[in-house]
Structure formats: C-alpha cells, structure tokens
Length: 312
Image 1 (spheres, rainbow, N blue to C red):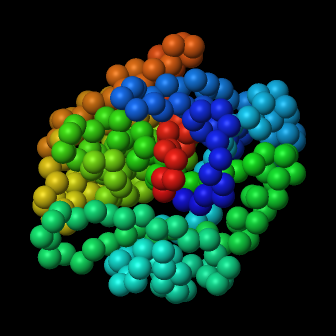
Image 2: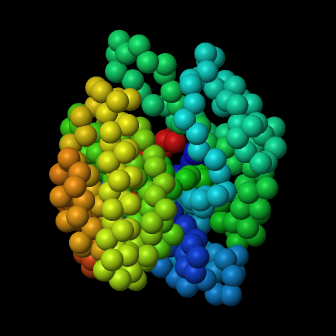
Image 3: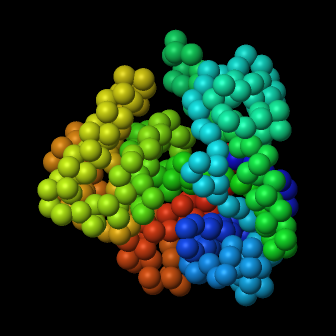
C-alpha cells in the first residue's frame, strides 16, 4: 500500500507481522521463471510487548539486512471500491482523498492513501473502478515510531487483502478467476482475483476457532453462514464481471477444519480445494510448512512477503 524507499538489500521481502500474541516473520524470494521460495518462516511470542520483541528480533534475525514490510490490522484502515477519478494517475490518490471524508472517523487531510486498479476488459461500458485504501495519521505515525524505535526500516506498509491476493495469484488458472477463502482465529476473508489483480473482497464474521469449538449443530449453522456468504459473493461477482470465469476456490483454515472444504464443495458451483503451498512454492528448509494448518496460520505474513517491487 505505502512505499518508502526503493533500494534493496538481501533479495526478496521480509514481512514482520504482529498479531494478538505473536510476531510472524516471513522471507520470500521471487525470481523470474521460478516458483517463489519461502526462505524463512518463524513465529515468536510477544514478550513483554511488541516494541521490545521487535528490537530483540532485529538483532537475532538481522532484520536490518532485508527490505521490510508489515501489515495494518483490521480496523486500522478503510478499504473502499470507488469510481476511477478522471485525473492523471499521479493525481488519483489526492483526488480520492476527499471521497473518504464521509466514510471514515479520522481526518483525511493527513491520511495515507493508496490506490489499486481494477482492470476492465477492453470495450467494457462499465465505469472503471479502483480500490482505495485510507489510513489515518493516528495509525501510521505510531506504527512508524514503533518500528523506528526498534531500528527497523519499513519499506512498505500493506493490508491483509493484498497479502491474500498475492497468495491467491499463485493458484490461479491462466485467464480464469479464483476465489480464495481464509479463516483464522479472528474471522474470515474471501477474495476473488484474476490475472493477479484483486477484484472482490468480502469479510466473513465466522472464525476457524468458532468452527473448531462448536458442537455439531452450531458448526452446521456456521458452515451454512460461510457457504451463503460465498454464494452471494460469487453470484454478485458474476453479474459485475461477466468477462471473468471463476475456475475454483481455495480454502485455508487455522485451526484445520477439513469438513468445511467438503461442505463447500457440495454447495457451491465451483470446484473447491484446500490450500497447499507446496504446489506453488518452494520451502526446502522449512519442513513444518508441509502442514497446511501452519501455512494458513502464517498466510498473511507469507502473502506480505510475496509482494513484488513497486507493487501495491
């Protein structure tokens, strides 16, 4: 979303992503013509707090040797789909800034704005749209101060939707769309991508933890809720983007909920498969990544580290 420098140190990106009780580190290298390589994936308990943990990890893992990125947490930014302003590309962010005025509860004049194209098929009569991201200074300034105090340079700040897009793009079939559903301890996120671009986003208020802990009847209700959200999203997507055929859906959950994939496969009209990064990435030095639940647990960090130079 936000980029701050262009020079690179070690090849690839190092994502440093704090969550509720841990910090995930992911380092990914991408070379033209080769599958991405996940070179490092580790999680550390936050002790006693995030700034102290960041400082400790900077030394222990030599984090200063990498181009660094992190993710804003849900609630720290506003993502909206808006009509593309009729201004030069370099002026779009400023033009969109004031459209956020009635959408957010923070001052827009000092907010950080990012803009992401939603490409349309040639000859389409539909109004061109973009995804725009706004984050207030009350979020960005303390974040930069915290990483600065730990002597960690942030080259970019991203959001979970774009991290998930980066992972989903690896599973796409050429010239076909892909739905990607990720459920973790905080909730669910459904995205639809096409040719590596983000076209649709839907938050789902069901977590993998809720499904794992529910009794049989409650789990059935929760699975139905997820399925209905998926169906509505696919149906709406088909109406909006008739030129894109969705080839299937990938599901990633942590903790593992294997019956969810089977349930969705029976009730949605696209093929459904469980995420397995071994099909699209290399990680020879990280044997624990053979566990798909571990992949799903760290999906946000892996996706953040999959960003390409200059990408939004």
